Length: 267
Image (cartoon, one colour):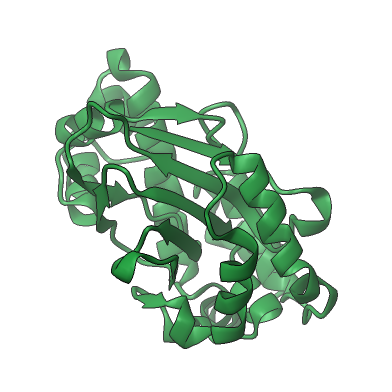
């Protein structure tokens, strides 16, 4: 299995976090239950051939737990990880409607789905060609974007930069909001609370280190990322992924990761 990411062009950076592609190889099983790591973002996923043999697109919201989706050999998977807050500001959709859900784009944004079918079916083989097609479809949304919540975006940036390791006092000072105001506006913008978003970013960073530095051991990785101990880290992974650190490392190690943010020093 192969997973690849690509950054957007600067003019799309406020809307798109990364473009991504997932492929299976000839030697992979016909079906794999893929574990999608939650990071507090929304994803637009395109699958071809999908049900009824045509392009299928779905929109998934942020979730506090990992999503498991079946991946089939011979099927092409492409996607867009949206920036936190982009769903409301750019696409005009209340993020609360899709938190923890995965909905067909055809029912949520039928005009956008029709444009994707015209521009991106068949799905391009290269990620660069796919990202160019998505940017053409999204160009109008960027031009007519509503403003993001600047206070919330400052907090989002801090939590991404620090991988979830920032104190509440610093977040409140950065946003200029009270704790109650920040929580309310953060949920409206991102879909989850600052605490959940922070937790997901911290676990994500720890999982990347688990993949890269298994020789350090689970206890050392847990300590490095602020978990009370190895048991606490293991409990978090089981709560989010339903897997032990060892099983999660085994699964992630089966996937060839290319240009993935975090694996090459990028947030």
